Length: 396
Ligand code: B12
Ligand code: SF4
Ligand code: SF4
Image 1 (tube, rainbow, N blue to C red):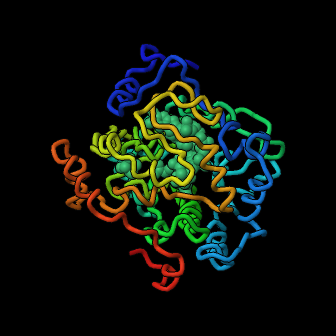
Image 2: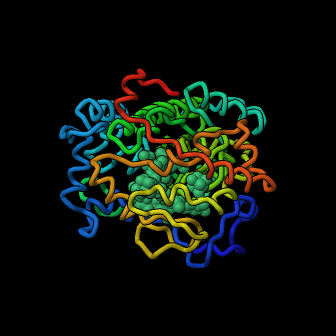
Image 3: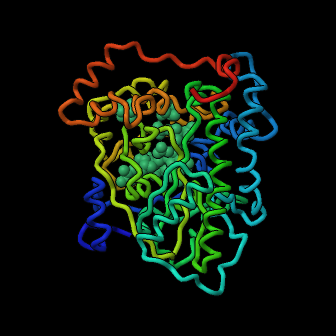
């Protein structure tokens, strides 16, 4: 599927422009067989004893070792945080579907045969956002479905061979939700303990997307619950007005900076969509390289957006900041846990909307002053995992 500008439907072309998306004629939807996690099962260039041990450590074979943040207790909290997500993602293992990661979350309730009387799309959109918050989402935006961001193929997890992306037809909208990660835990990256911030949100997400989708199906409309599976969520989150794309490969939100995860529900319920927002966050990245410098394996770019290095794990035909994900995941495999140093060090994680620094950094006139001020301060040190346990595991 090529998508030169002129064959895009108007609503997508206009919102691409507002979002600042820059696609070339080489664009191709991404094949999930090629993301680095999936490659770690079939591609000998990525798979190693270390990557196998990395995945095993999330289950029984935790990898405790001496060192603050990597003790048995640290791994215990991380793995326990993942538990509910794991229960959901293992449900359809016999069918080769890892729900929420490599396949959408199967419906537990049917679509009601009678449709509820709907209010206007604007009122229904407001209602959906309230219900998303009721179930526990911290952010919610809505956008049109856009097959460019859907995986061209997905793996059959029994054999790690490709099959078609089986998202049902007829879906028109995507409800994108944001889930704040625990601030204190994120401050301890890199550590096995910090991985509890990631695991806890996946477990939360699983419940929230399933409940929101069940609500919509009970109203008589189709709804498909989805976490990391089925589609790239970053372009969707930007289109849904939740934030802007940063150098650290994450959506920077005004509320939490990059310290947030995203989930989604695909639906055919008629809803008013949100517009991408110009927030001034990504503009700051143009002259900031804090995340790139902090990355221990130098996986992040220091220059302007480009078309990538030709890695099979990078989508083709999108001008953007792209990471060396082979180097990034290689580091995770060595650690036996995930990393997010590039999230921790981002100033938008520390200075959310409403703080003076945020106001300066997002204003074209004062951006330079914000950078100058930051450079004169000592960068905040990583929180020692032992300290996190001492302060009782509460967010600061
Ligand atoms: C696979 C994956 C990874 C892999 C590898 C990516 C790869 N290239 O294979 C690795 C291990 C590197 C990884 C690391 C991390 N990830 Co990750 N990852 C994913 C996942 C599951 C799939 C993305 C994918 O298929 N990428 C393959 C191709 C498309 O990669 P790419 O070309 O480099 O494109 C990347 C970006 O440029 C952007 N992107 C893609 N297309 C387009 C188009 C436009 C126009 C724009 C602007 C951006 C954009 O999205 C891609 C993210 O990998 C997504 C969830 C999802 N379904 O989207 C989460 C996701 C992107 N990861 C996330 C996070 C937080 C992380 C980590 C911080 C780890 C952690 N502890 O959570 C690190 C950050 C590393 C970094 N700086 O890059 C979050 C980001 C949240 C946010 N605030 O934006 C997501 C959305 C998961 C979630 N549940 O929220 N990740
Ligand atoms: S650390 Fe700087 S360059 Fe990196 S994402 Fe944050 S603001 Fe952008
Ligand atoms: S997650 Fe860690 S290794 Fe990967 S890009 Fe970020 S800082 Fe680098």
